[in-house]
Length: 377
Image (cartoon, rainbow, N blue to C red; front, side, top):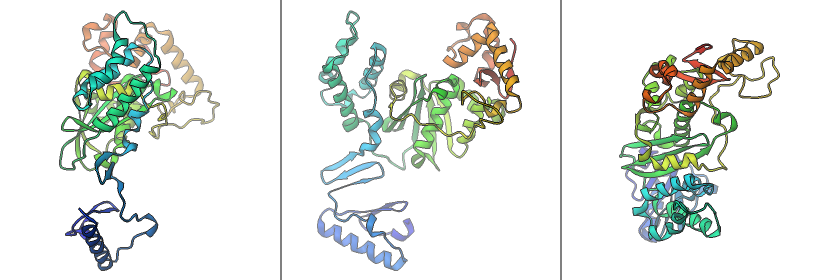
C-alpha cells in the first residue's frame, strides 16, 4: 500500500485503511481524484459500501479526527470510563493517586477533586453519596477527554507498563512518559488463583495481545514492579513453572525487555489493576488445558497439562500432601500473595526458597519449581 500511494498529497494509509484529507473542499477533491487515478493505474479496487466521502469527522487508528481538531476515540478510553466506584478509602486513595500524577493536564483539578479528598480525612467516615459519585464520574471523563491519550508516534520508543492485583490487570501504553492508551481486565475466578508472578506475567500477555498493532515488529520495554518477574524472564525457558512457561512462550514473537520500576512510579497501571473494568472479564487464551480426560471435573482449573502424567487419585494425594505440610502451606500463601522486598522480612524457615523464588508457582494446588513438584519441606 505504501508503494502504491507513494507521492500522493493528502493521502495516508495504515494497512488497507486509507484517509484522504484537505485544508478545504477544493484540495480534498483534488487529492481524492489523485487517489482514484492512482488506483486505476495500480489495479486497486475499493469497496463502495466501506467508503465514506466528505465526512466532518472520522475514526482512524485510535483517534477521532474532526474539523475542530483531534480527539481520543471513545473505544480507547472505555476501560478508564468503565472503572467501578471505590468501595473504601484504600481504593479511593489509589484513584486520587492516579489523578495527582495527571493533575497538570486536568483543568481545575483541585476544585474537581475536593469532594473526594474530603473522604480521605482521618476522622471522616466512609459514606459514598451521590455527590461523590458525580465527582468520580466527572473526573473519569476529564481523564478520558483531556489527559489519557497523546498522539502515537511510530518513530518514538514505546513502553508497556503493567501491574496485577488479586482482582485485575492494568496496562498503560506510554511514549515520552505520557500515556497513549489504557487497558484493564477483571480476573476470572480461575485466574485470581494464579500465583503472584503468574498474574504479573499474565498482564504482559494481555498487554501484548491488546496492543499487538502497536507493539508487534518493534522493540519496546515492559516495566513491572515485580522484581522476580524480571529475573525469570532473563532465565532459560525451562526454569519457569509450567503455566508461567506457557505464558512466556506466548510472548516469544515480540522483541521486548522487562525492567523493574517501583509501583509508586506506575500509578496508572496500578490503579487500573485494582479498579478494573468489570465488563472486561474474559479469558486470556494460553492453550493450556486438557480438561476432562477420562475424568469428571468439578473445577475446570483443577486438572491441567502440568499434571497430565498423574491419575486423578494421585493428583488429589499430591494436593493433600501439600495442604497438610505447614511449611508448604506457608510457602503456597507467599507465592500467591507475593514475596517481600528483602529476604530479612521472611520467616527463617522460608529463607531457603529466596534464591529461586522466581521459579516457584502453584498449579492445581501443588507447588512447582520449574517443572519439578515440591511435595515436602
